[in-house]
Image 1: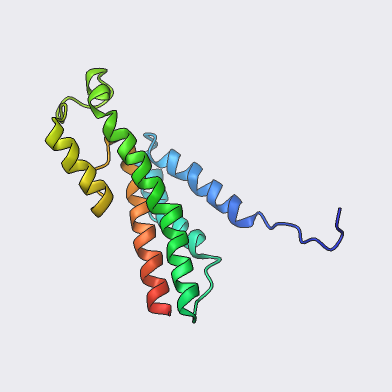
Image 2: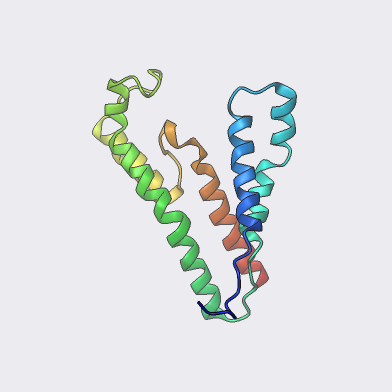
Amino acid sequence: MDITAKKRDNTISIIKGVGIVLMVIGHSGCPEWLRNFIYMFHVPLFFITAGYFYKGCNDFSKLGTFIIKRFKGLYIPFVKWSLAFLILHNLFCSLDIYSTDIGSYNFRQLLSNGKNIMLKMTGNGQLLGAFWFLKTLLLASCCVSVIDF
């Protein structure tokens, strides 16, 4: 083992873990006062931890690399899982996993929602409600990097 190797600082990972636990508590039917307290900071906590290691780019190629990396890490998983759940939508409706007020999709609705997922990052299924965070983080990080450039 290399003695000069740096030890990984787990502080940010621990903060993210605490944020996840608080988010679960806040969405679990906890007392309203606790939910209101958690909701004051849990989303900003995720944005702060996501941007903590951000380094400004003053080179166009570094900016492009950053944006491509963000698309690979945020857009691709969003689209992949949203399309998978879109394909499973009618099955989830027939199994009463999704609420009945939406109902099954016909072929035209499936295509329309697929287009919205890929172009607008909207229209994902009920079970992917928290995916709004991926879209917001992608847009925020790309905007900040372009403004910073």
